[in-house]
Length: 270
Image (cartoon, rainbow, N blue to C red):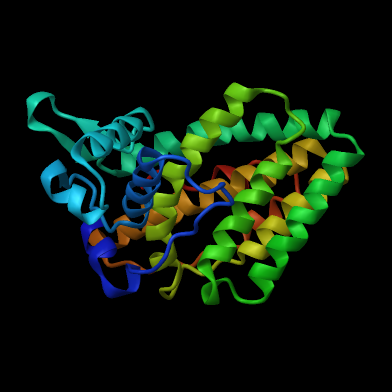
């Protein structure tokens, strides 16, 4: 399923560059380029990474490339197979479920803590990030996917910025990168009938709840927002087998105005 989606013409397209500073070393440059190509699917899940081929593609020496691959191993985007070399880490429905569950646990708790302790500076940062995100979404994210991904990441980071836990932010950074791989596939699914969602309305629900200091409501809205991408792909996989049609409710939006958990739990499996 993944290969069909990633290899289709509709799946092709840029993945956003973050607001990272310019790379300072050749290793860092190669690392970012490889990471980008893995996230967007140019390098396929499970694909063997041959140093002798890739060093020409990325215009670096073999030693530099191995250093970059080692960094990607630490990010779990690449696996090493002893003497057999490197491969792009596989993706799967089980991995997606685990990734989603872990991100929900960490990010919702970080959001709760930020709401409790966030000061005027935090609030201003969230407002600014949401305004930037709104420009990308209301103006049409499909026209500039790089701007949208930057804005989306900035908004999620601003929400949890009040929580002073470097480890949490580091782990969420890794999880976010892995989530980009699945989000790239979900964009293709979201463009098909029956998988409509209003991402801006989801973000607006989180934003309003956070600034109203309603941590339970904000956490529920954030969880629904994160889980919907997982749900879409689980449902899509189910439909490929059964041929059934799916129409999504607006439960991620509703979670921003209600405290019921039924809409948040949703369909975690099929």
